[in-house]
Length: 125
Image 1: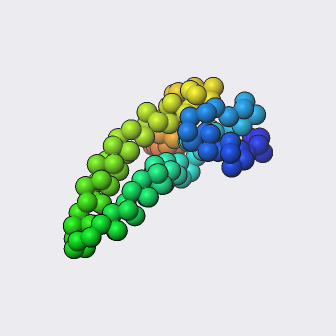
Image 2: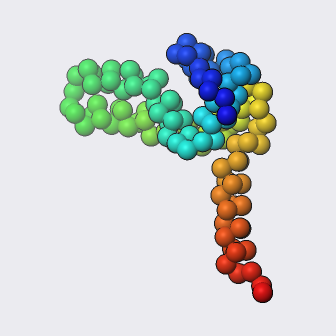
């Protein structure tokens, strides 16, 4: 695996849709299919709406109204973000010159491990 990692400006460009150089494809693959990829995706998606949610605290009125406005924005946003995770990851893989089917690499590795364990456990003599 290559040790090339994007710098801060490259990472911002990557998150906004700009492809990284070919030397960083290993990093892109690890970022989109490695451990913690769902957590990173959710955090990246929530960061842009944080200023809007903070702005709701400055609207005059009871706390439950401000909290309700925040929830009316946050719940559908998180729902659609989770629903579109595969689409976003496929887009970033293709945009960086990788195969879109690598999105399923985690599930494929997990299924292969389960199948190997089954074969070892229940092998006919």
